[in-house]
Length: 119
Image 1 (cartoon, rainbow, N blue to C red):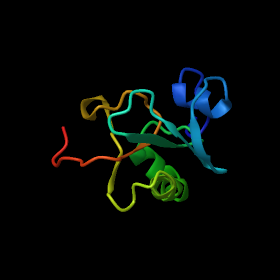
Image 2: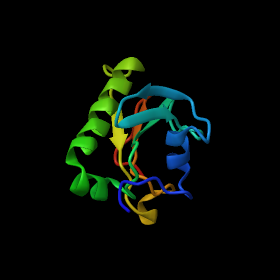
Image 3: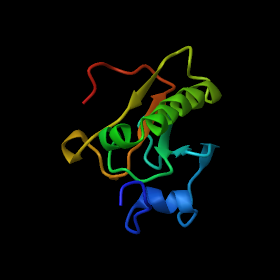
Image 4: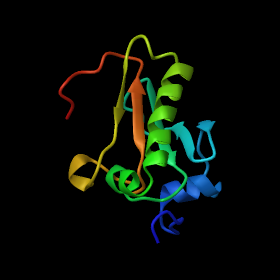
């Protein structure tokens, strides 16, 4: 069922505390933690605690929680002191776009100059 924890989902296991993560922020609807394979000096993932396979399905079912994810991404940037230099929020959707964990999540990347276009 949409929104319910999935037994085979790595991020659901992090939300449940069954898999360790370096948590930097947590709210009632979201959790933010450091990426284990950082692509920039700051690379934090912000996820909804509820399971949705990607950002589009999250936004369609729970627009308020989707907004919470984006708001938390901004707070992560402030906490990490990357606001002034600039940062990127990336939401990959589907394997072809690089999504490897099918639980909606936003990457907050910064701490160095970021090229455009990415990929």
